[in-house]
Structure formats: structure tokens, C-alpha cells
Length: 133
Image 1: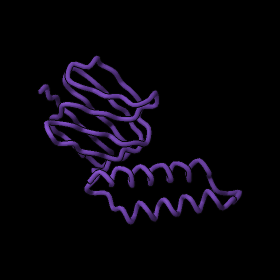
Image 2 (image 1 turned 60 degrees about the vertical axis):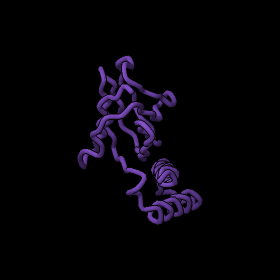
Image 3 (image 1 turned 90 degrees about the horizontal axis):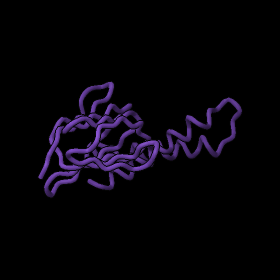
């Protein structure tokens, strides 16, 4: 079992600082899995789930963009936001989804469709990650 250091940091502070055996995340180029000894890289993240594995334990986080950096035996994720599955308020995520869907279905000239679409993606991601509690 080759564990390596994993840090997930947001503008609000550190969310994860532990050792894991595998990290998987969604990058702009597709899903990536990182294990000990992975080649160094930097990749932009999209809205998606980050999965952290060690032994018989899997943790899920909802991440809303940022960057993943892999260095020798260390993975750092600098995320715009990151929430552990167990801390996600499911009712709040469902309400955010409803609001975003309403904004997208109501064609108002002054509304930013791209912003509403991102809000919808974030809400759906949070709901999906929360299901892994």
C-alpha cells in the first residue's frame, strides 16, 4: 500500500490534509486517477467529484473547478470550493438546483445563462456526491 500526501485547499482554507492510496478527479481533458509514483502534472479541474481511497475507505468531495497538481508522492488540489460528502446540505443543494432550473427556463434578457448553467452543474454535483455518504 503506497500512500502519498493529499492536500485539498480552497480560498476558505484546508479541507483535506491526509495520506491516501489513490485520487481520482475530473479534469478538463477527462477523468484522471493518480497513484503513488505518478508522473508530475498540472491539470485544470471541472465541476465534479474527487474520490480519495485508502485501505477500505473511500471519501468523496464535491469540487467546483480549480487545479490538480501531482508532484513526487504528493497531490495538491487548489479548488474554488470543496465539500466532503458528509457536510453537504442536501436540501440546500436541491433548492439551488430548482432555482437554477427556474432561471434557465425563464428567458429574461438580463439574465446570464452561463452563470445559471454553472449553478445547476454545481448543485447536481453536490447532490451526486452527497449520495455517497
